[in-house]
Image (cartoon, rainbow, N blue to C red; front, side, top):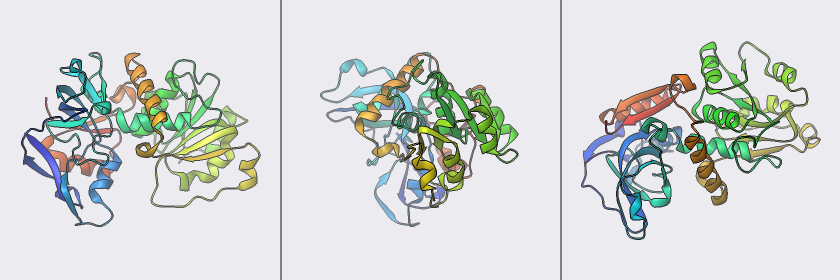
Length: 340
């Protein structure tokens, strides 16, 4: 079978296309015939590493997210899983075999059934972005622990960077849960994408004052902020977070530090929360998996231009170009077409 792997850290050109024997699932595992592999920033950061040229042994197959069909199951796994369409989450977390290969063996708990109504493109776009967004929306002290219709009724969410993959996921999940969604973007084109995702109000932060515009909509501040650039936006977030609200920071915009006004945030009992999906509590992740699956079954999650998430397809042999597209800030979701 064909697989993409790297045996040293570095630029996208460390990725090589190799032929490997097809693996067999062990106890508690399933083998999935991969149709789509979804790329995330953490995939390219792991490949680049902290030092270029550092050996990787065993070689790493990248790709946390993916979608395909279960081909076989190992001991202790329900035989009924065989032949089912599934989406995969965290395939390569602390494991050498991700989804950038034709057949991936993963723990059975890392696959979720994908209904016939959902495409493999959708399935490969779910894992890291939607699980991260779920954590960001449910982390606050007064926030719901579960998402779904009505669970966020009466709440207002501010999503920084609504045209990004996590921003798009946060908009879609919040709207499915009946929240009011405000989002910030950096261009008119990205504003169109955020609106297509379902945002109620879109603010171009390069043309408008975010604090002024948000205060016009919600004078007393927002209930939750999904933050992609905490160092750049800390002062704005401090002014906009409302009573018992939470700012969930899921990305690091260049290694900066945040400085916060203590008194300003003490009065509303505001919470600032760091979010890394890989190490979040198991119970929170289990809730997220169930809720994202429910949203898929409900037809509430979409991908593509009409959903504000353009898709960029690359064949498996062009995995290096796919990684480069992520590093160069491709707007939307980068997918690797492993099988047609």
